[in-house]
Image (cartoon, rainbow, N blue to C red):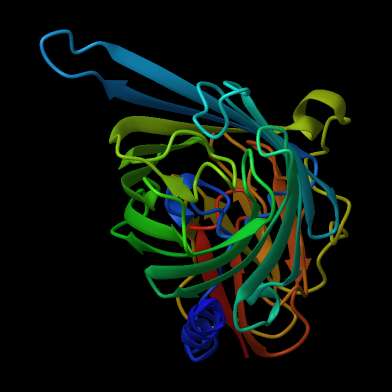
Length: 349
């Protein structure tokens, strides 16, 4: 039965057609209880604050809150390391405060030419007193992002392991708004354990790198264990993401033009303004040899990252510019790494 479920989940993902760029770095790219294999941007520390509330029955209706804190940062190419600290955990009676120390790697990325994002996560959960593992596959098709997950979980306060299988979907309604949902079930779960689920309204806060998730779920913490084992309690809450770019605090001040491709252009120069979290593109194709100069007129940093990896800017701070010369005909699509919903394309002839 377990083998059939896993094979079905992987078959669904494998048979999906080609899609667009998938980055999944904020709440608008994933449901509340699945990671979507996000890696983050090198040189950035991510702090996610998750708060969920329950209320007791009438007449008391006592409100109890359960904060979860996630801190993570890329430590190598396609490798993310972090810790999840969940309070008021119900996983094990001896551990009201649960910790998960994890490492996640993504050997294949959709934006790198693969058919999907594929990631593997290993983590040690002190409440379960064992190592947990997850294989995740995610695929972006236009405005829709699909996620499948297969997990191996240490049984809390018992010997052996459980297998869990989950899936989720994100539908982007606009540049700043998405709706999402997910469900994960433990195969042969213990008595009283329910399918873990969530439904969410996901928001990108304009002119900031922050995202906000307003959601309802039946799980408390954000560990692999916590997001797999559902309870009878319905919890309402939110998640707020705070990416901290270390270069802004520790790096040297950026020059007006990035050193990469910043030499004097020998051909025509076309300017692309970055404003309002959008690339304002030129009309029509451009001649071979054109130098594009991107100017950041937003109050936060952006990058210009080629979808095929052929060029990559540094972090372009507000008021700064970055140039690249196109010597080969073709259509070049690009996006902003910290804000993957920002996309553009130019044609060179």
